[in-house]
Image 1 (cartoon, rainbow, N blue to C red):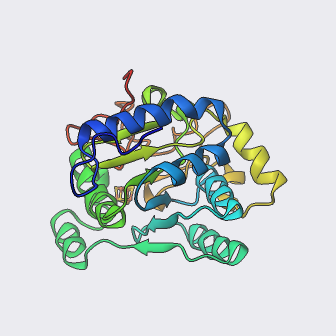
Image 2 (cartoon, rainbow, N blue to C red):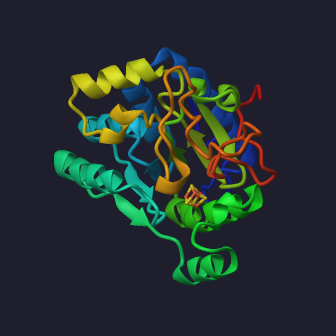
Image 3 (cartoon, rainbow, N blue to C red):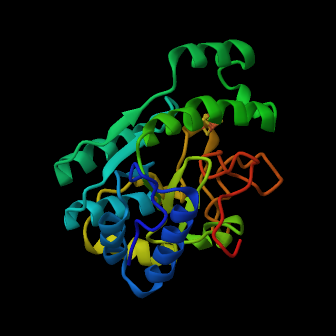
Length: 261
Ligand code: SF4
């Protein structure tokens, strides 16, 4: 596979070449297990790979696979300043278990100060615009810095987490971030992830056992009732069914999709 097809004279890939590489990787992924997918990415992406983790079940599984397979991936997290105490405990336990450092990226102090002055410390409950403004300052802007210089962004997204995520590809070119976006466990069920976590004794957030299936910031996450969808506890007061924080949205507000999206 000639991944450099379409490279310019400086050796960088142009957009068409990125699209072609994404398509070839996306075609290959279904035939591989997640470690095989990670190795394929590491072999063919001509620059740094970054995994963003929020220490949820899927991210913990992916961190385990990356660390135990010895794949050269930087693991980073976005510390919004509003996370559960348990999340920090899992962060520390994960570093200790795998002997790694997970780099934290933080909101700019001046931006937080302006946001809180404008809308109050819990102003995100007031409207979806206010909530998105908070997510932007605490998550989206730090994400840009976390991904600076990366050529592939690895996520623990699963297709069956929400209706909107079912359209995602394993690998796509994210034109907004100008890098590949890859989801090596996209086709795994929550049960399959939970089995890996249990079998490998991977550190997990104890809140999962209390009904918090998807864990984000403390004031914006609640436990879900039996039978409720796993992301129903995120921004539960918003009723439009588009509960995303902006990390996985394109500039026009849509989820970054695959070729068939
Ligand atoms: Fe702010 Fe809630 Fe978004 Fe966290 S999840 S950044 S507290 S609005």
